[in-house]
Image 1 (cartoon, rainbow, N blue to C red):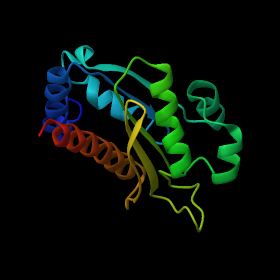
Image 2 (cartoon, rainbow, N blue to C red):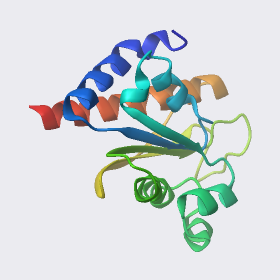
Image 3 (cartoon, one colour):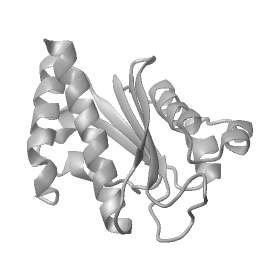
Length: 166
């Protein structure tokens, strides 16, 4: 498995989604599809994983996920508002029940005083309901920031699935 640290989480997510007869997708910027890759590293993931959209540029966020350019202009691509709209756009355009969206500054450059390297916004949606939108600040190099973002997104999804099952 390509993502040994996440294998248990992915197996738990897969089991919960299969039992619920639900599917998920990802809308990723700074992780470049790593959450989707982690999910699809598990054999049989086509039963519960529908699609991943890598929307690295602002134009991709607008064209593929329907994030208003004005929203990006107002809050910046790395913001809770944009992460939430990425998740909402994916749910609106894909036959999925769950969406994880991430946008951030993985580094080594690109950070600002208000959004330093390691700043990541994540959003989790179930249907059209917002479950959680939150900011993380991860330390480390680009690889570590991206790996920690993958882990944070998968943990949040797993927790939400297991909370709804209990």
